[in-house]
Length: 164
Image 1 (cartoon, one colour):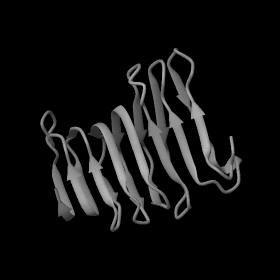
Image 2: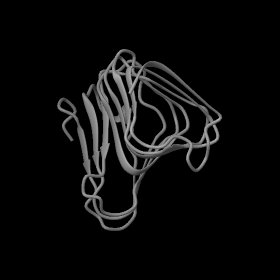
Image 3: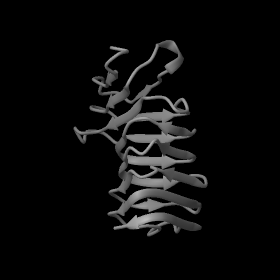
C-alpha cells in the first residue's frame, strides 16, 4: 500500500475472496484500486468518506470468475472518478461525486431506491439496469448503453441532464 499514491489490492487467489478495507486505518490517500482476477470475488462498499479527495476504481479486467460489487452504503462527494467494472453490480444507496465521472460497467441491480449524482460530470452505465426501485440520475451527461428494466422494471427513473 502506498497511502500517498493510492491503495491497491490484487486478488491472486483462485478461491472466492472477500476484500475488506477500513479507510480509518490510513491517512490521506487519492484512490482505492481493487483489481479482481481469479475466482469469484465480492467487494462491498459500506461507505466512502464524505467530501474526501479519493476516488474508487474496482475492475475485473481479466474476466475470470463471477464477480460482484455491492454498493451498500453511501459514497458521498467523491473527489475523483468512480469506476465499477464487474459482472454484477448491486446498488442500494447514493453515489455522488464533486463532478468527476461515474462509470458502471456491468449488469446493475437496484436493491433499494438509489441515486447517482455526478454534478456536471458524466454518468455512464454500459449494461442493463434492473430492479423494482426508484433510480435518480444527475449529471452533465447521462449515457445508458444497455436495457433499463428489461427483466425487473424500475419503479421510477428520473434523469436530470443531457441524455444520450
